[in-house]
Amino acid sequence: MASVTTVLAALALIGAAPASAQPVCGEVITQNTTLTADLNCNRVGEGITIGAPGITLDLGGHGISTLGTAVRNPGYANVTIRNGSIGFDTRGIVLTGATGNTIRDILIEGLVVGIELRDSDDNRIVANRLRSALIDVDSNSDGNVVRENVVTAHEGVISVSGSHTRIVRNVVWTGEDTPMGVGGHYNEVLHNTLVAARSTLLYLGSGGDHLIADNELLQYESIHGDPGVQVAGSSGNLFRDNHVDGAPLGIWVESGADNAFRRNALDGEVGRTFAHGSRRLPGGQRRDRDAAAEQQRSRLRRRRDRRRGAGNRHQAQHGQRQRRPRHRGGARRGRRRRQPGKRQREPAAVHEPVLRLGRFGQG
Image 1: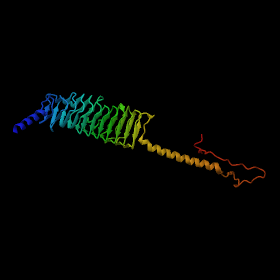
Image 2: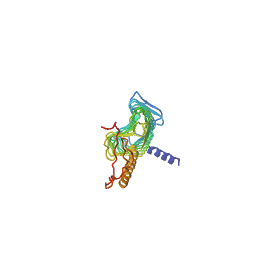
Image 3: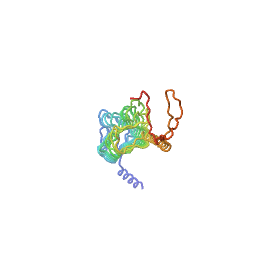
């Protein structure tokens, strides 16, 4: 019986995919790997390269530090990178031509590019923290999810140029940079919090057909700040239930067409503001700020027209009241005696209003 148990245990060990030991700097891993200690690659320049599909790189709560790229995936699918920290000087995690990857629970600190997707579709960037590093999804990367990440400090930005990407529940708190830029087509920007000192909070470039909904945008030094939202060449977007606070100019449509704005709250220091770059509005665009003002103007016009119509009808029915003539030069005032045989003058039926000018208004 013992021999049978030993054979079964040996077969189980043979069938299982073993986890690799602690990797070294510059190594290409081809199986599940868990770090057992920090990996310092500052002298070598490169960290770890993924060399097989369907594997997991678990940092085990440890960190990778490098002057080059910390983790690189040159095109393998269904890879998971998780649970640790990365300090870099060039790039943190780079996916090139990779699909179905997951990057989650990573603390990334460095300069410029923290997570970069190139020609990579259907990946998930979830619950990471980035300091002074950006998330960059290029124009050839579609169908990705960027969710519940916290991006802070200088150069902390989320930039998405691809299409069909969901950008949901992220917090981006930066200084002088624009927290979020979106291009491509058919992206969803939902429930994000974007904070900056004076910069534009959300920038929409070329492309369009995005859904921008339920986002909180705040400028905290906005005396001479930029617009809260800037639309430059993006068309067919729906802005719904967003709150822009602190920006002196809430939403600026520099160029673009067929954008719709519904139930947005714009609370700047000079009130609720909305502006278009051109005097003639592109078709289909609606302005939140002017809706209430236009309704008020319509009510005033209707009230004025009713007053004028009532006055004209009264004059047509009863005639305008005639003033008694005044006699100057000491003549006795009173009614003129009716001369026999002389027909009295009939009053005019309708008198148009006359603008009466004083002696300073006569030309």
